[in-house]
Image (cartoon, rainbow, N blue to C red; front, side, top):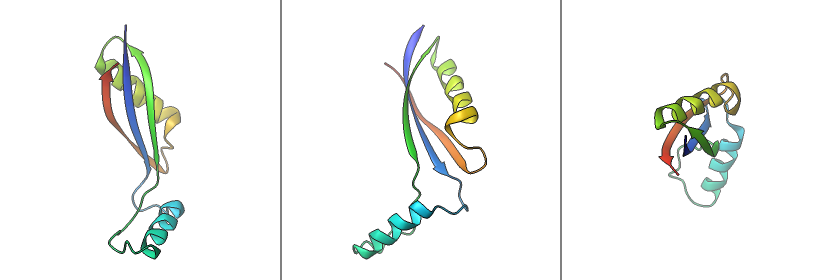
Length: 85
């Protein structure tokens, strides 16, 4: 059994209202950053997962996201990295 550090990004689905992202975009525009077209506020999770190999750690993390960490109706997730730790 090995330990893997897995980084996951969870963000609102494209096309859905993201009031927090809109508030951040509006504030950036007010501060003079007019080139910001859109902001999507999400979550960055880092998990330490015990698994037999990287593929198993990735699969377990995918299942965690599908069952708990991301709302399948309103959010998308991406497993950004899987590294032995």
